[in-house]
Length: 185
Image (tube, rainbow, N blue to C red; front, side, top):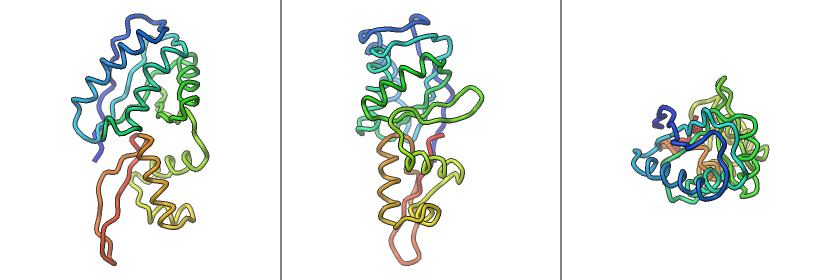
């Protein structure tokens, strides 16, 4: 089961954020908070009131945080970006794309999008998981016309990206177990 937490008010010092040093300082504060969370926690990072972030700040804070999640340093911990203005979104998008990372952005109207380097199969699989609520490799193989192996690999890849979580495993009639995945939002 995924624990979706209330938005975390990041202690930004200003509404215009620039440079690597402030980005690193904020990333360290947020990382300490994330490390204390229980497994399978999704923390919305609230950017309310931030009008602008430059590329350096975006890279140092958001991209490096997402890289730690995707790299397995923060196992079972996930983030969603929240309250991004268009200018903030644009520089975060650029930083994630250059580092070949993906993050989830929830708009204030509730719409969800993936930022960063997103291909069609990633987007389709993420959206299918959001629509179904939970997804197994078998579900994806049927809906996506894929082999079980290809489906399993794709779900593992999206989990490694930090945009889906492995929430449980269930027995299979023929013996063995299969994992159940869920989009983090």
